Length: 380
Image 1 (spheres, rainbow, N blue to C red):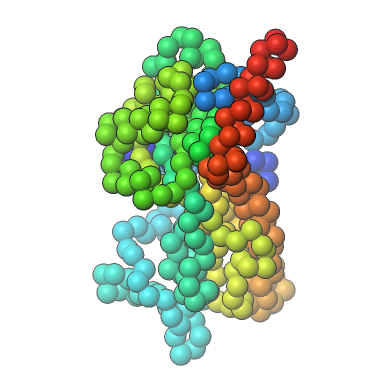
Image 2 (tube, helix red, strand yellow; image 1 turned 45 degrees about the vertical axis):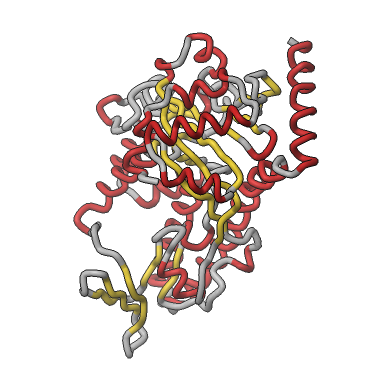
């Protein structure tokens, strides 16, 4: 997926992630992040729908939720600004090793190299650094292919705007077909009312949605498509699964250039399996260690907390003249617990979606959801 085109999923930063971020960047950058984010407390409670667009229920009250949503690209640009001249782009790591003195050494595709006191692999799901440390992959496909896109709320029919509302929603149908619709409005639901600080690439109420299907050769072939062809083929798949046009309108009216496909990858949910290497001068964090499907919406937030934790332990080591490896060991112990907890949460939704792709799950989902929708209508 070309995240520069789609903007990626919006990123949720909960209270702990914001606290960590505040420690890592200058106050002005943090203010600009808040000014570019959408407040969860200003949204209506999340909604759950069936594949016909009928209401099944609501999530909890968010009025006291300190969390915020922000475009992935917006956050990256602001963090790049915070890094300043120390950020160097355009070089691909091809080899990781160490010098005769034991210092980390990396080689790049252009033939250059770099040596330092500490190497931190923050290079994502396909991390070469983490693979080097673990002696193999640190995650595997989770069994779902995702498709994301962006749709302006104003491009939807007025009835559909009212149905979806200023909230996020989720639909899970038979045979593993699922649709998450996230709501983002950094202007209308501004966390910090400071238009002059706003840097968001989202300028009006927008639904950033993610469609999901179990991984298969047929689903995998969609990853070769893009734009209108991918959008139209994706819609056809949903229709074959008995979905009505109403819940699909958010895909039908999407900006075709924003629609792209990606694979869900996941590390082990067991903390002891994460970072399975002795602590030393090379480590890793974020998705490089605990690759997390987007079904929890917290993967980036946990990576930010990893970074803040590492900085804290390194500062403590410097103050107490502690060995670098001890500081890294303490950081990795915390990271394992944090990553394992978030993976457990994210994989609950993944397993629920995959369970509907069994014969029993498909029958149960197809029969139970209409009943729940009918009960919900009677209650209203």
